[in-house]
Image (cartoon, rainbow, N blue to C red; front, top):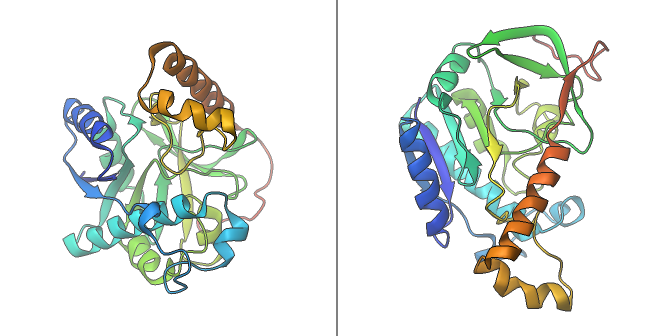
Length: 266
């Protein structure tokens, strides 16, 4: 399956990293230059909905990320692909990503996304109802509460979903990983997850949105240059911290309980 990888022009290190990883996994891919939130006019209401400021921290980064994914969705439509793999540039690539994405494609229809990476403040609860077996003892499953799984680090998306996203994203009022919003608004017919989660985020990289950034105090500003230049001991400590945070936010389990909102299609 063809993959589209989002990478900011100012991040050549990430570009080199993800390119090497995908080549090792024999994934057919192309780099799509992302939209840098630092270059956006946040007062342009044709691009940014004022509601974004109340809904999300780091609105510039969130808006840039949302516009980057929209750029990919439009590219998928231009290329005429029925399904495609969308990746961010800071992921750890499983060796069977290509075959997994191909297997997923056969089970997706309508306006649907299948998340390869997802996180949640609480353990993400999954249902075994309607579960589909995938290679390597994985399953394609429905979340009990579609509000739980977040992350736009890696997913397979259908052409119909791209069409609806193209018609609905602007002006940006929510992040690209707020899948519950798009489901609730009828943009997406269904959001499913692959379990166990096959794609993880590399702790070596700081989020360009700011999620794992240091703070904004004097101490944090003084440490920022050390973080950027990856001073060995400090970089190791920060990578460990990111890994610990990720392990807390990427827990999932099967539970026997009703859906918060039962999907129209199982």
